[in-house]
Length: 335
Figure: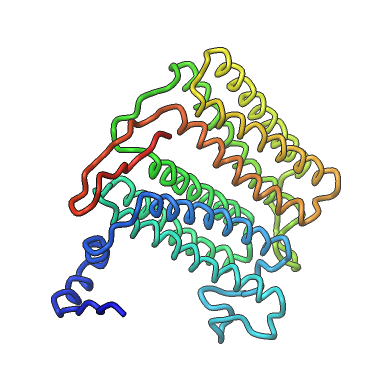
């Protein structure tokens, strides 16, 4: 059995002063480890959205009727709260798992050699978005699932997914200046695609806020809008996104684009088709909870795929560095 290194008083003081620097001085993760850490944070940012949807769709939104405690007298759920309390409290606990995933991403990024400050900043951005959304989630409970706060809660989760996606992509690139792979006209088309996708997601939250799934068995106020009209607007925006995606794929084919933008656009188109099928089926079958949950997952995947199209329009050249004490290591690969 190997010798356990002795931790000196100076080491302990250094850890207290700055634990990230302390860990970074003693651990150098592989490039693949940093990628996996960023991917774990992205996966958990999607999981928390889907489980949050499950809370609403099972009528468990007020399973824990207060915040930050579950009840006035208990930090955790009690038997009197029943299954709704278990579901709501379980979703709250998953926030800690999300924090752990984001924390791992931050530590891995900070410990990578050489240190890439941009990656660490993206990790910390995720952390603060998670903290803000946790507080907003508490406000959602305290105001009795007000649909406007529920919509804001989902949109902030969408922002978290965006930052996590960018960080995951940046772990697969170097820090050299980006080189565009397509012309300005194609970049502008993708910008329009991203903007319309944001509108699509935003209107989707209005559909939720005006629709029948209030998130609790009691009488929860809905947005004073005609649900069917808002749903039709949502469908129109979806068709615009599909049309823009198909047009982009056609243009990329015509200009003999590099593989990355072409493949990412194809992936987005396929996800959009699947999401559209789910959307229409749920609309004509009176919004069964399982399909609504699948549609929420699809919304996250559409957003990730759209961002990957945007990020695929440029590349950063491979960067090879010599880390003292290690063999030459490629710290980035092509996007």
